[in-house]
Image 1 (cartoon, one colour):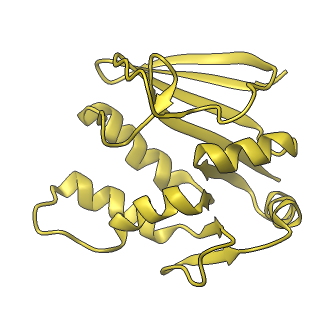
Image 2 (cartoon, rainbow, N blue to C red; image 1 turned 30 degrees about the horizontal axis):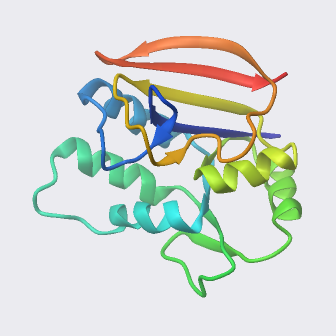
Image 3 (cartoon, rainbow, N blue to C red; image 1 turned 180 degrees about the vertical axis):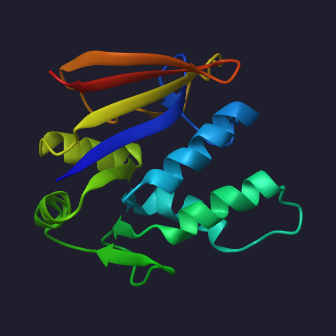
Length: 176
């Protein structure tokens, strides 16, 4: 049975914004290895559209960025959206029965499936489908933006804390 994990970079005040801060080299290497180990990813429309950046090579990319893109491209993706009519390579559009599709993925697959996007994570949390939350805190205060928990924070139990790189700490929680 697969495990559904919601994890993102966030500021100390709880906001996610990929344009406001970036991982240091050690944390980026961690993300490359993490993505390589995923069974797949489930995305909401907004974050999927951001992540489509990795579908095409760019001449300014470093070897590490190419590694991340290759890992991301190789994994299956399921995109939950009512407004999209198509998705890119190695992706499947999910327009209805999200709960049934996610239950099916968890039952049929092994390993870890990443959940991408706070709004999708809120919906899956409300359905009791997320098995683990990984919060990657950075020493940044944004004061605005999209909160990691897009709805009420579910009851959680801390199971791990890890310093990754020079300034990020990952707190891992499971539903209490």
